Length: 106
Ligand SMILES: [Zn+2]
Ligand SMILES: [Zn+2]
Image (tube, rainbow, N blue to C red; front, side, top):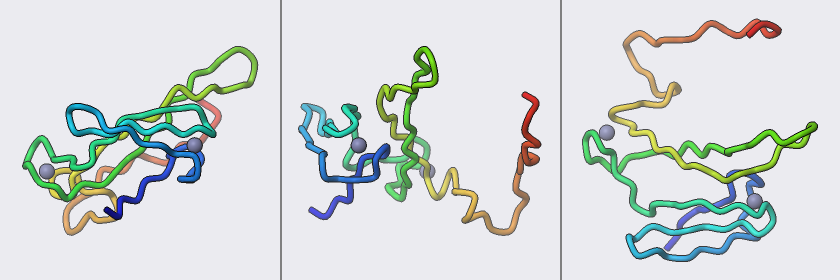
């Protein structure tokens, strides 16, 4: 098994431990960041059933008082190369680009 798993927060696998769950998924824990998340070892696209997916790890932060951001966990989203091609792989057609943020206003 050559699964490349790193913590989406600290980008390291030094402190990771995995624990298989009943439904075939893996619960990963990063001891350094003290967060845990669930990883599906064989994710499938719900639209086309394909396995050609890419990962979009989202670090879930929660603002606590002051300036500290505390990490709540990691949510892994999956994109399908066929149904939701990543922007770099757009070919031919039109891309829907949001205008660059000018900053300041929101
Ligand atoms: Zn970590
Ligand atoms: Zn798909």
